[in-house]
Structure formats: C-alpha cells, structure tokens
Image (cartoon, rainbow, N blue to C red; front, side, top):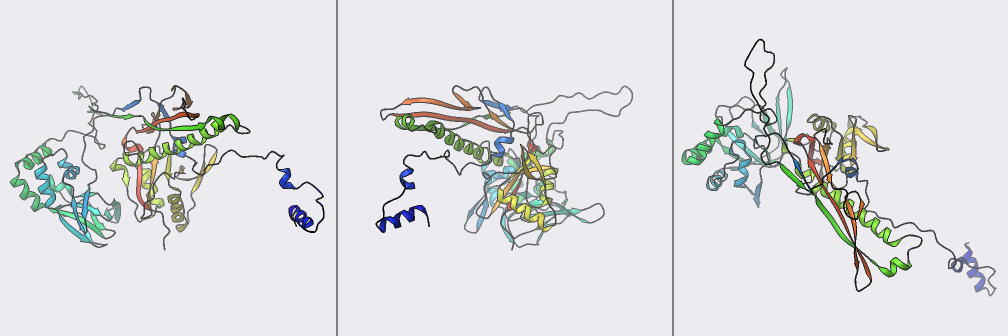
Length: 469
C-alpha cells in the first residue's frame, strides 16, 4: 500500500496525520525537467554527409564540356479512362526528333500511335530482326535480354513507365534489334509502325527535312555524348597531329540558393519570468531550427528545381529486376559510377533489401560512419532517409551518390558569413517587439545542391518495400 493510500485510510479512521504528505511536499520541491522533446528530429544523414561549398554570390554555376543531347528522356502521357495518348511535344524525347517543334506535325504523329494492351511474357522485339516500329511504354515493365559470349541469355536491363525503344526506325531503315524485349508484367503500350511514319514523312516536308538533317549532322562525340577531343596515339615518325580544343556548354546551369524561413514569436512575459531552469527563447529557437533543418533535407531530396530525385539523369535511373531491391540491383547501381560514397534509402527500403539478402543467405556488412555503425553493401554505407517518399503502391527509390567537387560529385551549396548568423548559412534576426509585447525573430536557412556530372547520382526507382507473400 502506498504512503498516500495509508494516510487516506488513517484520515477515514479518524486518526490524525502523522507526517507531511508527498503532494504537499512537492509544493516546496524543485522538479527535475528535461528540455522540450521533438519527435520530428531525424538522423538527417544527407545534411551530414554532403560536402558544403561556399556560394558567395548566392548562385553556383556548373560548367561542363559541351554535350550533344541524344533525346533519351522519358515520354509523358495523358489518360482518359482506359485510353492513353502521348503528349505531342514529348515526342521530342525520341533521339532524332530532338529540336523538332512543328506542333501540327507532332500532333499528327502522336495521333498515329496505336494503343496496345499485352500480358506478361509477350515478346515485343526479337534480336536480329529489322526494327519495324517505335514502342512507348505508358505503363508496365519490360526486360531486355541478349546473347552472351557463349550463347547464353544475358539480362541487359529493364524498361518501365515513360521509357521507349525502337526510335532508330526514324533514322535507319535497315537497323536491327540488338536485344529481345519481353514484357515482365501486363503493359499498356503505344506503338507506331514504320509504315505510318513513312506516310507522314511523305506528306510533311518539315519532318522529312528534319530527319535528313538529323542523319547528316552527327558531330564526333565520346560515349558520354560530349564533344570529342581529337588525339593521336601509337604513331611513328613525323605524322600530322590532329588539332583540337575542349568546347564548353554555351549556357551552363546555375543553381540559386533556396531559403526556408519562419518568424519565431515569444511573449516578453514568458522570456522575462519563466527562464529558469531553461531559457525559453533558446529552447523555442532550438526546436524551430530543428524543424527548418528537417525541411531543408526534405527539399534537397524532393524539390523539383534542385532536389536529387528530380535531378538524376535519365540514363542513371534504373528499374529493379523483380520488385524489391535485391543485391543484383544495388550492384548494377554501383557499376554505373566510380567512387560511390553512400546509398540513401527510406528505412522501409533498407528493411526490404535486408529481407532479400536473407532470402539468399547473405548478410550485408557494416561500416562506421561518423562514429556510428551502419549497414553497407560492397563497402558502401546504406544510410536511412525518411524524406525519400513511399508511394501508395508501396514503392520507393534508392539513391547512390558520389560527393565532392574534386570528385565531380554531388555537393551542397550554402553561404556562410551572413548577418546575425547563428549556424552556418542560418541566421536569426531580431525583428522587434510589437504592441502586444511579443518578441519576433526571423529565422532563415539558405541552401541548395548541385550534381556536377550526371553519373555522380544514380537512382534505383520503383522498388517494392512491402513484404512478399
């Protein structure tokens, strides 16, 4: 029986209280208090791992070698019920239609695509046969396979929503399929036969001239699409050496610093009278900054202007071979770049990868990062980030980054030395006291991120994070 219960029982029996109750004693005692706690605070690995570059002018320009865009982006569709149509302007993502802007012809061309519903296991293209059509993938997944050195079947990749293949039918009538394309799931496709394209080219001088110019204007380039640097090697004697120069992009991309701001308000009575044992303004400011930093990391991942998920090059986006993230998928992600520094994934995606390792009897390693042990794959840390979205279909993405200016990687952008700077690139400015005796502080955080070259960032898209049956 507790003390309070015994005292209450004694009072009910008519006996006098023998000692001071704990409830009364608490009026004279000082309680031990924690600082305010906050569930929103996460590990924020991205902010901790990115190398931050000083941007004194508020804008960072990424200069690159001149590249010739090959039009390997994704195509956008519009859906009306079960009917799907390609957005005409999006046909410019096909290699030889890049730069073709005749709206009437593109509208006509888009209307000639036929919708095709196919089930899993259907062969859409067979290696060695003439390319006879363009295929746009509105929904579904398609696997590409080819023959290995000894005749065995070799997986060459996966295509999914928005991808396309067969675009070479537009520029080379005699080219053949280099792989076999087979549907892995039920697919909704838009197909344009060669005959339809030929008929439209006969009636449209604009399209015919564009195709001819595209076939003739093919400057020398390396495998990355950059203008080639002419060199000579292995020669003997006094041969004529080639002349060359390194050309740059005429309009390089510029990243302006973004901002996250709020106005913190604290009543002067609170700041004056209730500052012990914890400073009220300091604690209010601490929690506000934590929220700003959380929003900063969210923007670095999801912002459509500079967020990493939206700035990954299409050539660096891959699809999982099955559904959940497997060791094979992460191996392919690593193989597309040098010097991968770390993976970044939603905790549920990390758990899904762990389950796939368990299925194969594998145990991912671990490594120490900033004094903490984290899981790793091939020696590359796998860091959690709850800012990477998980869709309603229970799919997410896994990113891998190479970081640093010296490595031509991904970098964070900020500006230090701000007026009233409280933390690097974060300022707290006193805005005064209003007529209600309320203190106001303007809290501002400035930041952005830049991908210096396309292969610095890779994304494994549409990985399933739900458990298999």
